[in-house]
Length: 269
Image 1 (cartoon, helix red, strand yellow):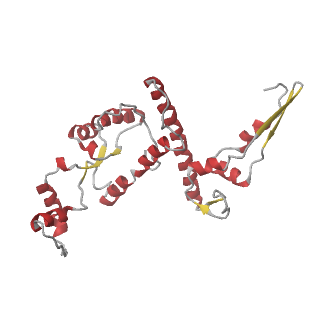
Image 2 (tube, rainbow, N blue to C red):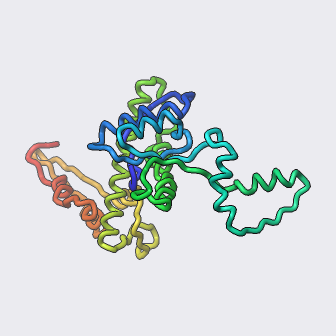
């Protein structure tokens, strides 16, 4: 879900499964969790299958995706590009191969046709391009899931049931990271401020777009010590720094909740 790149559903499938038939089950899951229609689904060219687009169109939702070469004949692409080519341009090519073929291929380089059923009045060309370009957020989530933050891979489980459970569990953690990061960035943007102190060795460096990993790293030196004397448990909790209090404030988390961890208890924990 934009603009956070927040995953709404998780599917666990065999690696040999093709991508094309996976869109409809995912779209069905998403539609069941949303209150209404009018949703814009943005995907790659595999989502451009006619059956998938028809399913999205039927209840009043919208799609945006590029067409694969197999779905768009060269003649149709040339017709779409003709208004662009009619603008005076100059190309200088030097080649010993078939010049006509090279020229025809060169004219199509860098061009791609996107298809959407969204009305132009509410989704301009510029907005459509930007919406598709923001899909890197989805890939960033996959990077978090498989990389160091959540370390899904390598996976040392042999049961498919355990593997599926682990993926679903880590997908919840990914949602938490995404929401934490998005909320903090939004609050900083609303306040027109930036956050200092997140960069080791450079405490004055600020950022208005901190990552969730950097925010959590700021709490790495917190310790809770528990000493039991008879029936009395004494706790000592590392005091929060100014940076940590600032982060909690951006997340609307009261420091009182943290302080309760250090409250004395008449019974050993």
